[in-house]
Length: 465
Image 1 (cartoon, rainbow, N blue to C red):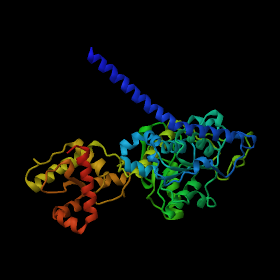
Image 2: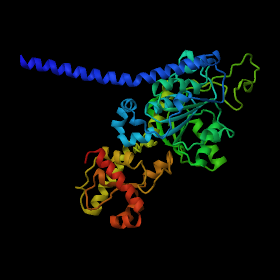
Image 3: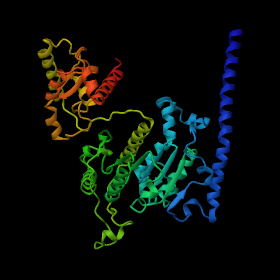
Image 4: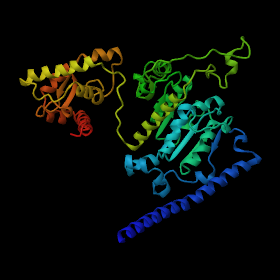
């Protein structure tokens, strides 16, 4: 009987504790809700118009009540913010999440890709966002927009996002600019030392100008290529612009950056390996003799429509947000190599390892990897290239030829040929490596030594060694 009473008391106590916590949270949220509602009513009363009726301006910013917060304030000291971001804190750790909340990110182009990227940056706790787009929300864009509703049709895309973002994470300093990126607006958009710029523009001229400006200013930028006319989410990749293929937009951007600005690569992009499944729709004006250029909102912008499956730009945006947030938090994520080797290549590499071990040591008994593990070492750890190469040089067929000159060798000859002790080298590099000691490499090539050691430690961690 006494045991039952104790159980009841424990349940009552737990319920009271949970109720107290919920009440505390509600009390903390109440002033924010009231402030938010007051702001909404104030916007509605402004000049007797609703938000959607306010005339377009070049620069639309959040009201003073929200933007008075200084961006260098530690948002995670706020209990509500900390609780809202608790899963991120558990994932990254407090200090790494603090880097995210202290960051400033610019998102340019607020279509299907840009809205989903911006939305997840907000939900991930980025403390300051600048949202830029000159266009308005259309009814046909609702199939891929992250937050817009029918009530938002006709209002500027930037203002639409800002309006919705206020109710999701009001502590974020959100600025919206109804503005076209070009040379005249570059300073206004890219000043302020953003930690990252997201290029979600689908116009080639504007995209090239933005990327070149970011490189010139030394800003970290992530670019999205064509998400339209695709349907396979498993083929979406993140890689250097020089490695992207099967995408007409990427090819044009690469060509113009190289020809006009001398930029060959060094810009990470999100792209799809999938070939487009549809083409631009034929132009259909009011009569067959209409000139398409007469229908351009902005000179030089595409008038013809490309079919879009809304899920793909959404995934592009999610990938962009994930890439940026992990970069801001300092979490090292190794992207999958663009070119995948077939099973025969991995078997060949395994056989070469066995033969090399027998030749050098008289036996292959210390080879502790199979073909599947050779695949992991080659593809995941060394990205299908020599450990001495810091970036990809051979793409496509060139990479197939390059792999035929590679072999796996022990990093430390005193340890077995295991997952955490094998590196990929060219034949001549392997011969040189075998004639050197690790102490020699550490002394003469400290950066190379540290880089290889870091990769092998990653293998230890991922395989629980």
